[in-house]
Amino acid sequence: MLDLWYSEKWSEDTKFSIKIKEHLYSEQTPFQKIDFFISNEYGRFFTLDGFIMITEKDEFFYHEMITHVPMCTNLNIKKVLVIGGGDGGTVRELTRYSSIEKIDMVEIDERVVRLSQKYLPFTADKLSDSRVTLIFDDGLKFVKNCKNEKYDLIIVDSTDPISVGEGLFTQKFYEDCYRILKTDGILVNQHESPYHENYAKEMKKAHDKIKDIFPISKVYQFHQPTYASGHWLFGFASKKYDPVIDCDTISWNKLGIKTRYYNTDIQKACFALPNYVKKRLGY
Ligand code: SAM
Image 1 (cartoon, helix red, strand yellow):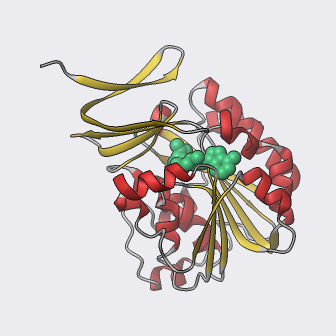
Image 2 (cartoon, rainbow, N blue to C red):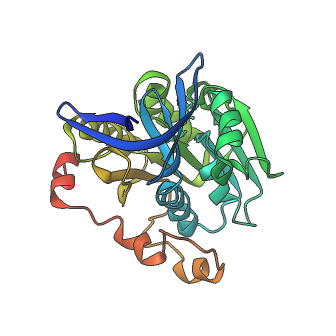
Image 3 (cartoon, rainbow, N blue to C red):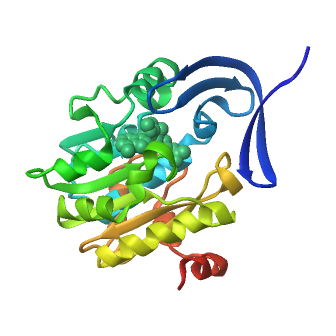
């Protein structure tokens, strides 16, 4: 029998492949192509337009780091807006805080949510939490039209700046996020990889825009074995709090949240960047 492999292009001359047991499902939605696979090494995983979004084995790296870093910075966060995040992993981590009262999730493609609920219950099972409101809309349009709501935290859990995700990397989008955040609000966003040129270019563009708008703007790093190069970044921008100086590690540890990747040593260490990354960011 022939081996079946999933392959993804990471740069002009680099590909990453996973041996697959089964191609579970495929669908072209009005927004993107969705595929679900099963593999021995990574368990279940899903892709959008030929790029891995999450795998069962390493999704917790991403979802813990996108959530607990801002939460430890301000433990009084009550109202959160998630943009994208259709697999539900970010919402799952947020629901672990009993202090959070409201989570609005704006996802452009309802099919990602419905199919994740079917095929990826390990990330999607908290989307039915009573504090969660699902809104199926373009995040760019949502923040533009958002007039009365004010959020403590916005998490942009988006695809890359191509196709439907492009608007979530624009100056206008970041300005609207700033406007709908409270006076001590925090924005965290998927910030691409510093390693391959094609991704690093987008990282720098996003950082330059955000630092023009927010008084505090940093990037932090984490490993993601199934994303291009395995080295990935999130952006942290805030109107008031510095994630290294103002984080409340003692109180966070008292909450007793059991994590598999994040800890409060990483809260501080993840903001220390390699020299080549600083150079690529223009520091
Ligand atoms: N961890 C992932 C990664 O970076 O590879 C991101 C996962 S999450 C599945 C990304 C989600 O963002 C997708 O479900 C996609 O439909 C959604 N998305 C992309 N552009 C969007 C937009 N303009 N508004 C709202 N959601 C969007």
